[in-house]
Length: 132
Image (cartoon, rainbow, N blue to C red; front, side):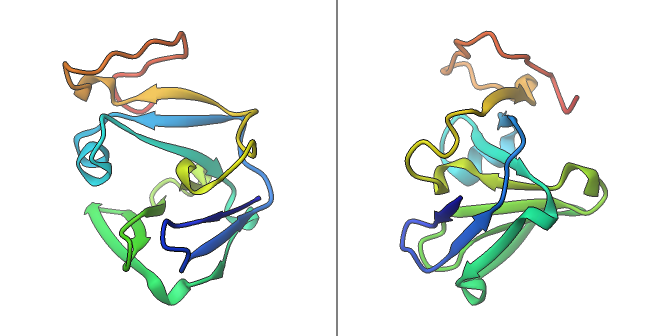
């Protein structure tokens, strides 16, 4: 599967994604995305590569040990990696993929303790106050 940022400078490719992704409601994700949550799919490091535009990646570490990468031009979130938990793999922004590439993925909800009062979760997927 291939994905691109909004301006197209960065293109990535993943071989497979885990069947369960994450909607994160933490304050950091909310403020970075400008919405009530961020939506990511989880990918093994070996299954992830930047095809084009690695030089356009900009890194931001809002939390120690968590590197978040975005496009330096259009500022679209690209992926994040938590060095303290390498078993989690890479969290790739789901919005980078077009079409039905992620149709098989379901999304659990994390950091719902930070859920804003103006948004309601309306599905029956698991909800976790923090990380499970």
